[in-house]
Image (cartoon, rainbow, N blue to C red; front, top):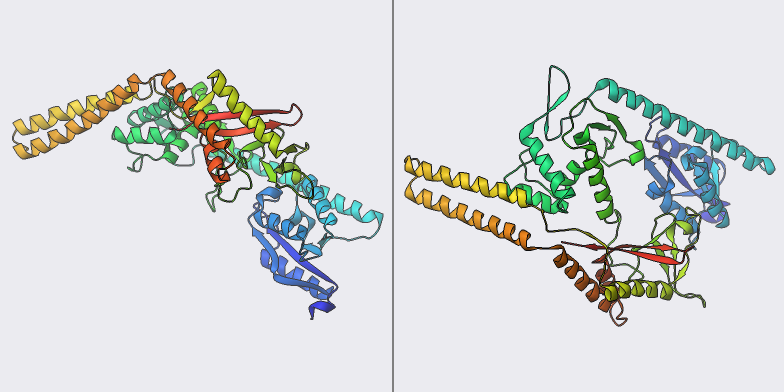
Length: 489
């Protein structure tokens, strides 16, 4: 059929839920939509089928193809007039989001149509559509609750179903994990280094490897290994379940996790475990932070909305309007409060924040690395191990097991290890809080010189501010800007 004889153009949104309760596969939904288009003289192109498999409909911002479809619908090209779905529940199971996106689409001249549910013209049409959406949302909430209750009961009845984490061994007689002390001591060192010594994940991994420790699989420690250990509630006596998607190993939202009290003995006190979680939250960089290559402004991605926490988006000057920033969530209808601020005013607020720090020489920041007590205990253990090894190789030589040449090589290797350990130990003992404060202030002064130099490229200024600032939080109502500094290793 020629395109110019077609009354309307359409796209199709096809989704299969993660709960697998829908009776129609993606292929079946696609076939029914194609048949609907033929019967109703509607054109739909292959590239306008947006198919998402195994995606939850609870939150629209977690569905990438849905977002791509909405963006295309709102574009100047206006590639389609209708969005076809098998059921309204495929479009959204959250009525609040459904209303927001449908209103958005109506303004762009795009209609959402269900091919299997009643469509009534006149004042009752929208009412029937809302009733259907209410029923879908109720079903989704009820199903979610039933699934979570069932999974929780299964977890509690089945006890410990996964492999034991490092530091534990399963007692086959009781079915309850027991502390395995040789590994438990490593877990204690990791938590102590993070909580009491201010070490980063990477620094802890390096120190564990330097001490000759290995993971349960015999591999060297990595940053992610340390992070997983610090975030595992098993070590404070809890059992966590349903954390990962079994298909793609992706981490689920925290609201979907199941945590229950275990019967095993904790290695780490709950108070210390919570301290570790708070520190992780404070030190974390934005999870989806982008590189700076495609930014519009040197503050892009680093200024956050005080209401919803999303980034403020830079907008260029246009038709007499000044360059500005606005909350990305507000632009999508997901944040209730506007955080519009002129770009020049935002820049001046950042400059003023830096000037106050520099003039007062008093800065509060989250250190990625501190010195006192940092790894002294671990390094002293390492030195004692080197001393024991030196005794063993000497005894092996005296007993005729090693030759003089072998003894010389082993002694030289251990002497080198001893020198490196003593250097680290002495360096840590000589470092003070004043040294860290001085270092941080020096970095802030250097960054201030860069960001206030408007002749420099925005990428240079962006990378400079990101080297000391974790985030800036702008509060429109209070007309205030809080700057959160951090010191990297």
